[in-house]
Length: 160
Ligand SMILES: [Zn+2]
Image (cartoon, rainbow, N blue to C red; front, top):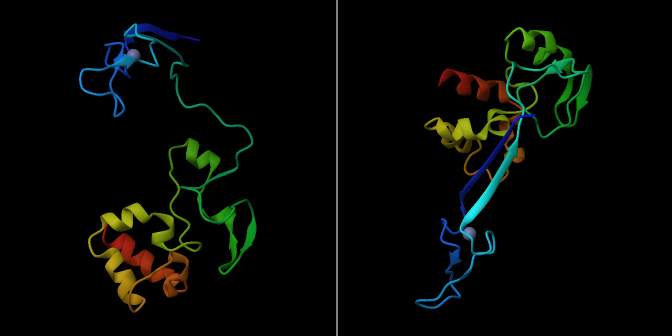
């Protein structure tokens, strides 16, 4: 296994060996806890060189990201959502290996639950969520439009 083994400037004290924090008065320093005053830091890092993506044993399906539900293979009866055939969501491992990427499981979660960051990055998206709910959504799981999440997914993909 290749190894990076270099002596670097102590990142904690910028190589001075000294530390002056809030408890040290004007003109005072204490010995840096990390390098014990030497100002140097022995950086060692072992790594595997990337030689292409490796296979992961035992994987059958690949989904874009984790959800608030535990996900698995086959038909799963999700609480408050109903049954979803998970073998028809995401992509097979072979498809992933062939370069296909999975999409969101739109039947399971609304865009806000699945990808809040992207929703916030889309101008007007969360305002519309609030508007559809007649005001402010305190908890995402309270959103009335979890029942109409197809519409929200349309909003999500249309604005992309
Ligand atoms: Zn130091």
